[in-house]
Image 1 (cartoon, rainbow, N blue to C red):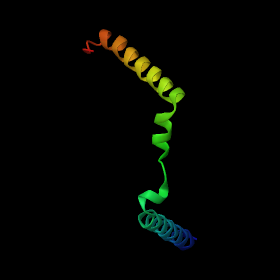
Image 2: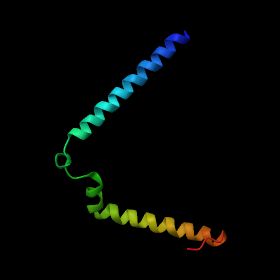
Image 3: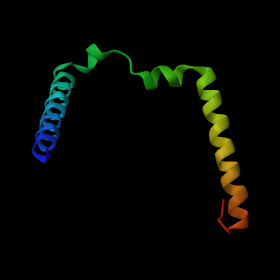
Image 4: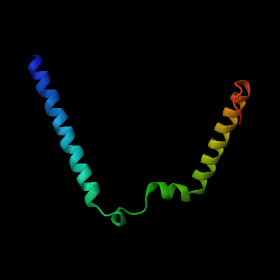
Length: 75
């Protein structure tokens, strides 16, 4: 029984490795201009997203500084 599991794990490992290599080859073969505009660029052009991100960052910094005053962290 142990040999069957070892073989199954080995086959799955090799299959995963080959799939990853195929994906990597596809990424390297596609020129950057053919991929189009990145998702990150589209998100940063969205005003609702940037406003929400700004509020989240400000809240995080405010919370960190509030805790920091108790823990003598200089903000």
